[in-house]
Length: 125
Image (cartoon, rainbow, N blue to C red; front, side):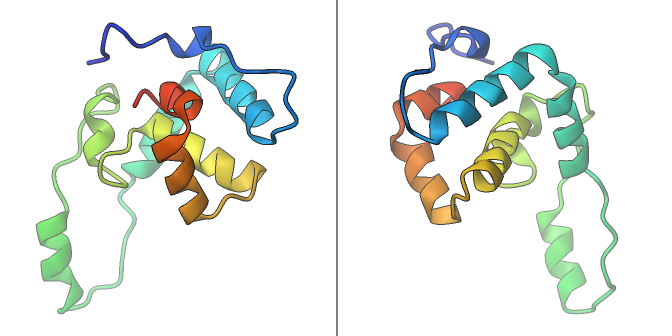
């Protein structure tokens, strides 16, 4: 459930007069959220896909402990328990876009996700 004090994603004001490479990507993501919200469902579907793996007597018991029942695709709010622990499909999409568009490393993403207030607002954190 979203907190009432959070600004809706499509209403967040992203600077357009900055030379930062981050802002055009955030504007693009905001447009995707507004115009093509079904893309988030596609990301969720991919995150929940049952990828087959090689049978291995050492790995299978560990996987059995880690794998939990999957939610329905309509329940994308509670899907934060899947994929990267604690990340929703929207946050995963944003992370993927930033890695590709700006060539952020995982460390760069961690810093931005933890300390960039505008990005945290867009991520619903």
